[in-house]
View 1 (cartoon, rainbow over the protein chains, first blue to last red):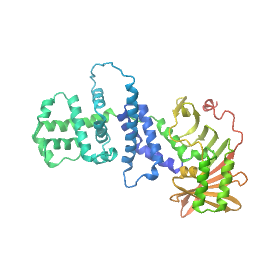
View 2: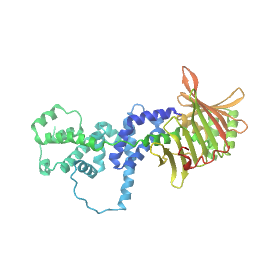
View 3: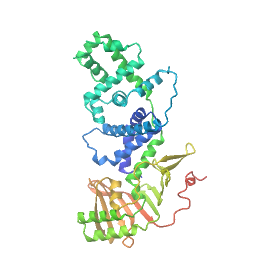
Length: 168
Length: 275
């Protein structure tokens, strides 16, 4: 039997489920964690649907829930991994996808999260600011810093000196 | 406008100002940054070309079903002392009067005696669409026409576990069931979860039956229970919606309590279809 909430869920999942999963995977780096995050998003959204302000975008609302849920997951995973420190050093990667992934993982979360929202999920700076609960200007600057850091890692032709001395 | 502010503008991915566009033509560094930013965006999409597994939809739907219906389907019409007091208060505040209070008190008192439940849902024009068998800590649900299919949930040491047999793979899907699972229920919580919050209640007497209505906040749907006055337990319910200014029934629910349930209904080994 399909109740109204179930039909509503089917539509929401169709419209936002894959993007939420992609975003959750990008933040957590784990398929199983991403599944749990997405499940938690829809359960939390269902529970809080009466409180949802209709004037807000449903997309930013869902992603906000996903962001905070993924952050909790990440913090828990970090605490667990600190107990099992691995000092293995790997050879530098040569595959460009792997290089990009590693460069992203090396970004601090305060840069990575807004960067992924704007560049991967195509939120505007204003929308990302709403999700993160920080000023729009801060989002723009954090995305800029993230791009700069990634460029330094992925594009060795750009030297630090060139970057720091570049003035108008 | 400083160079850095132009670079921030480039990295924002938003429409560039004419000043920034002019600067890009003259500045190789910033032009390189713009090109890097552009390639980065497309590489990012390729890197995260991932899709959720097919079972995730059903798993979430099952969790939602627990919220929208299952507290009710679980049939555990028993209440804690606190919920009992709350329920009485609800009726008093709503001004339903002594009759409603008496009916509800009877229902709650009797509801503590529920040990097993069997619920059947039929959709008008479509026949049986959902069935639930329940005992404390175990739920077996069958809904052939929707995403859930045949599934079993068991309260175990590791938490509430969800089981479903996948005919396409011949394997058993096992997952943690996430979300609140009520252990005790009262009518207002069940109706509110089923239709949305908050729900209001009203008791009416129709053709000698004791009927309790639960309306959602927008009066778009209602759940009309029929209560057995001798046991205080529901025997039937109609899920109704507004259609052309009148109430129309879309689903009919029937309840049986404390009857023997089919043998093995709560065993995981019972899930795969019998040859």
